[in-house]
Length: 228
Image 1 (tube, rainbow, N blue to C red):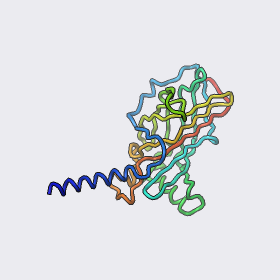
Image 2: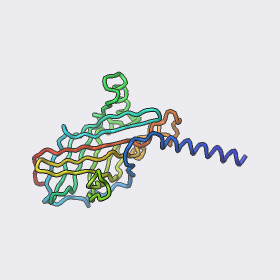
Image 3: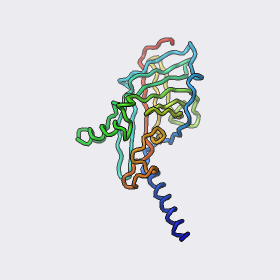
């Protein structure tokens, strides 16, 4: 009996592990931590404000499950990047969660169905939480990543939940403005209460959606700058 119970437990554990690991989106896994106090992260009065060009900026996403994946975009509705002494020192941006769009099913009935489902309470509940935000709380040089020159730590808020995450980013500051882009990275959606068909929360293996969401951020500022 003991051997049977042990075998059953091992089988359940391995099944959960396979669901957690199968076909995760590409990118560096980013861990969520407790939110950081924003009060201690204010830039100085000498910082320059570069307003984000919302038409040229976008968030790319990937969601996956065994056997396939979907990908798309979310629009940036507003944002700013703060620069001091030719270095990025802070910033924030707001995502329009009503703009969630799918690309791989473009032009089909399934596209509209998927986009509508992502906006419901199963996922991002956009009627209640129409925006998500990312506020940079610290900026550190990145020395061990060929795809990034900064590590940006910030508070990511979705569905009313705020967690601190640190993501690598490549930032370029020129006379034409600021460009900030990240390599692909992943976050665990359940940390923000997006639990639909999570394998680790009980969804059958063949129906589970991976807990990791793949993200890639592209921000571009408008050329003009102004003092805070």
